[in-house]
Image (cartoon, rainbow, N blue to C red; front, side, top):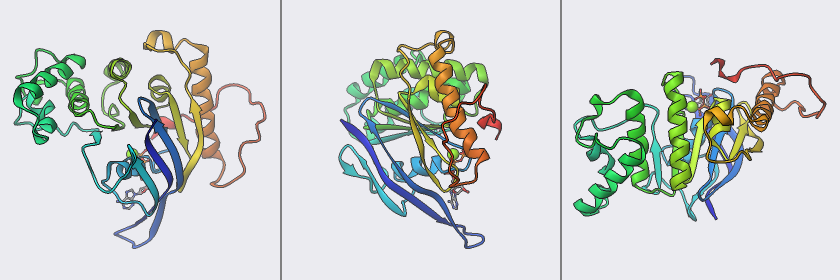
Length: 280
Ligand SMILES: Nc1ncnc2c1ncn2[C@@H]1O[C@H](COP(=O)(O)OP(=O)(O)OP(=O)(O)O)[C@@H](O)[C@H]1O
Ligand SMILES: [Mg+2]
């Protein structure tokens, strides 16, 4: 079953400063199945956040359609939960208060919402912190709270835009494992934006690689790695490196070739694809 269908999406921004028109995304189509983890990867500025913001209903597209659970997107809604890069938590509410906020808005009775809130805090490893305040948590814990808050609402699609980008490398790995664990237990539908190739491979079932702006889908790469996944084992798998190399190659080709140049000669290349896309 399709949870999210993006069809021929196009976005032209008008620069408020120069008045110039900028085509951020030209023609982007892909779907996410229910219970699937799909990442969108592409060079900086290619329009990843734009796609996510259109799906979230924060930005209106110039063309094409987005359908979530059979309904065309027309503004934000509780069927899409967004995990923000900065935590966007309510500092005056307790940890539990933050998690159950959406349920309260939907008038779920207190006992039920608190029980559900506790359940999701446990899922993200924050049991025992229900009555603390966000400022008493570390950055990583706040990010997990952001995830719990979205999961508690059981949205049709969970949207995440580089949620771990501002977190130190070691904590990031742990959070990626936590997220994978949560995904493997609850099977939410996830649309994840990143420009970290290894992160995308580790987390995803499929990776949508976008071209440079004005972006199109370059290729959708299957990630047929076994689950449950842990960093230590996954990173050792030859298949993991093969997929990461393929994605790097797609990104690298794009940096070298001008937009629209006929890439994809399929010729064998020696060694790793260069051009760490992370440099930005
Ligand atoms: N509100 C806006 N007004 C005008 N141009 C915009 C606006 N938002 C984004 N853009 C432009 O659209 C393009 C895509 O931006 P977007 O933020 O979607 O890229 P991104 O792939 O998420 O980049 P990054 O990897 O750096 O996060 C960029 O050229 C950006 O300057
Ligand atoms: Mg972005």
